[in-house]
Image (tube, rainbow, N blue to C red; front, side, top):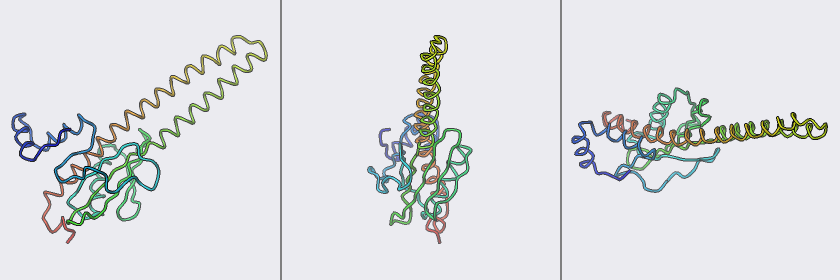
Length: 212
């Protein structure tokens, strides 16, 4: 998404007959990427999480203290995915999406300016583990069938083993493709959550933004 100034964003939204916020949402969903605001860091400051792995991530500033910023982002992701999360300390939270087999890892850090830098990492470990387990099981069964077919000259059994291996390979490919698609969607969800949390924070009284 090309970086737009606030004036350019408002002008483009007016021409399209929608609000600036709706235009931001549409651009994020189109690109499936992180929200780019003028104040957002171009390079990740927080870095990857210590737990799990990170396939993709989104990062942005939220005008709230770290604990409140993480909570706001968490609530948005929970609403979008229909999954519940849990805190990992005061400034971190995890959300496990059982349907997509993805984990959202949210972290917040004081930005030194009265707000927070929040990063959301998407961890596909559960989905990849499921795919590997499924592939191993199908591969083992098909190999056993093929071997038994050769040992006992059972052509049909050997053929069934080959066919099962082919079907298993297709299923594994399909599972990994769905996981990749879900991961890209998760990045857009995370970007939307960061934007939504910051937009909500901007509408709050200054005292609440600073945690007073």
